[in-house]
Image (cartoon, rainbow, N blue to C red; front, top):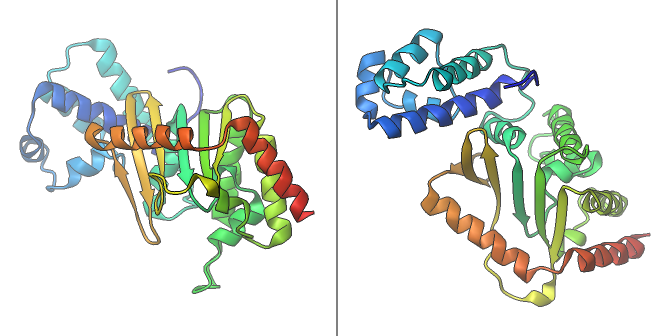
Length: 280
């Protein structure tokens, strides 16, 4: 596993994925796990989603139930589960978004589509602050969440971050989130991001007409440790994570279709340049 320090929420996601894979391979029924470990009915689901940790004793019992005989595989799970039990850093995002942040941190590929807004991890501080501010609750401190987004962006743009594909609707170049100057700063930031070797940015022009992404936004996350794909959908007060291949394959295909409908990366840079000049 190396010596890289990864925060516990990421390890919980990885442990959950590994346990689910082991369970499905062994053919053990969830009700049998609940009975053996005296878990309430939904605890296994929450563990496999990375929302809850498992104790060392529970890990050993699960390894026995799943008949894991490979010492390396068992030790890998023990190590990850131990790291998952470390004290986590204070949450700077809502509980329902914390799993997404963990998944994004563990992802090796990120594919984002939004018709009107820039992907969170590529937002500037000013742009993020405008989006996160709640006009219905001006007492909420948004600065921790703003800092979280800036930090996530630094990881992507540091040259060693995950491969990141972002498809935006042309409306994102015109919606003055935070005001005219804030939008110009954001587009300049996008222009710099698009020149990074691990970032691909494309804009779907208004002239493209109807397309498969109208009325929706989503993120597809690919993990390699262990191998998994998630589609993430977010609303005002909650979010949904889809991980069944019957769902994720549709989102992967939709994203590929959106990339095909979008302007090329070169043309997208030209669109950014023109819009930045308009905002000067």
